[in-house]
Image (tube, one colour):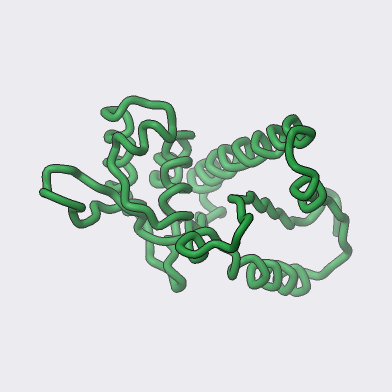
Length: 195
């Protein structure tokens, strides 16, 4: 199903788990829990994803079934069921030599890309209403590189190391003045037809 990884992350390799995660509400719930480390009820999640508490409870139980979230210790009298993420990060690594795994991973990646590109489009629509300091600080960037696989691994590792100190989960307890939640989307892959 899932495997714990170093650094507080969860590795997903099972196609069944990938298919279970494809639902947009599950992606949002897991993303929120992974990024914040919060402990939440189904009712709290319901407001976040626009579903009823009973529907959200079902999604949380499904995520728990696959080891992506877990019940957290009670915050009070024990009648309230609270949930937390099983790790701070999610890494999808299916066996791409297996058609079932390849199809499930493709569907999951597509769901994440759809969400991420919708966020970028939303930013493009609203950026004129944002303060100039945030417009100037933001960037949509694309570059075509000519690198070896080893160099691309190095680039990816350096970008990960650059971003890690700013992760919301680690900084939310004492954020610097003026800090806002910010989305960083990064992709690096060989161009089709490139040698």
